[in-house]
Length: 293
Image (cartoon, rainbow, N blue to C red; front, side, top):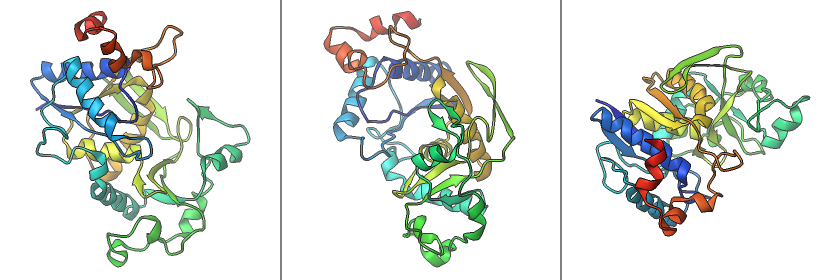
């Protein structure tokens, strides 16, 4: 049975680019006679606001989207808000740690940039140079049965560093990660070149995006992930996490990005193209969807 999902983050009002991707996801689920899941990706507590959550649901409904499971209607794989799924993420972190896939890192983003003699950035993302990777062998995490499940990953270290600790996934430098995308076709990325060791658990005791979406998509039995092409590189990272956790990898379909008149990809700061603004200007969902038919 096909299971797809809509996974907006309530950090602002949804724009036309979101709508196009979500409409594609809904059409693909409908074509397969499948189930569509709405997931509220509200892990960024500093930016996620209750008003944006309410607006998200209202705007998606106005646009004509329908889902069978979600935070507003329930379902068998809830809760459907990431802020309520902490224990699932912690369990996945424990498995990665026990299997030796992750290590603690005290580097800040500024440390990473400074450590690179010739900064290598992909979409403004510096490749982690492995500063803390070499030190990881000296650190022995406290077994979870000794530390108790209520403690945080940072507290489960045998010593407590003075700086905040993120946990990074150790990639195999030079490994080629391949997957078939439903829209763009065969894809491949090289670990250590296209991306480095990446964060799976943040110093504020919150699962990072890469880990959270893998855990959620697996737990919610998503069979195909439909999202924007800007996340192709993230998919390569997530393929590694699926393997490390022993989870089945779903299919992927990445949509071309919607751009503004200057060719820049839409962002939530493009208020004039938010669904809320377009609705207020008298535009209809049918009119907005017409170019995609």
